[in-house]
Length: 198
Ligand code: SF4
Image (cartoon, helix red, strand yellow):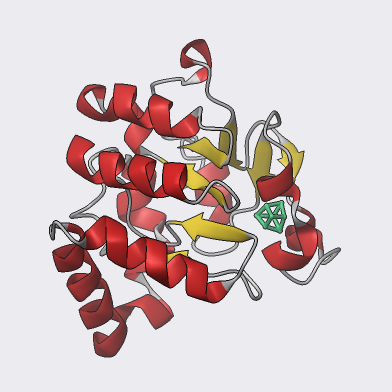
């Protein structure tokens, strides 16, 4: 992410749109994100999202960063319509800040409409996250995507062309494109050719 701030939540429990890929490959289940201190921070964040003061607190925190763009979510996802509604309120109050990232919650009927409202705000650059284990497709609903080894422009960080998202800017300055990310962990061959490799 470089200098860009972000907000995350605990994985799986906040991921109603998770796919078989998520359960197997999610980086939120590995390494740094499994450190107890980090897990506790994300648990506290989840608790905070339930507060009626969440919107005010986040607006204040984002303003203090003075960053041009804010990432949702490095791990975790949109888990209820009420939670999406809070981010809609935040983005409407902070029109000068870009909110970007990707979500698999586009797959959930109960989140689809509020997520589209959030997605279509002028300062929100959020895409549907997809992978090869998914049987649904988001294109008929107007989504652009972040794919894992699928459709889209290759992420320049994957080939070492940029140091981080702050330096790159592609995902938070261009709305209408699809991004392809490399699978950089787990068994890539098994992911790409599941019927050939067990
Ligand atoms: S394309 Fe750029 S902004 Fe998007 S994930 Fe890759 S490095 Fe980050």
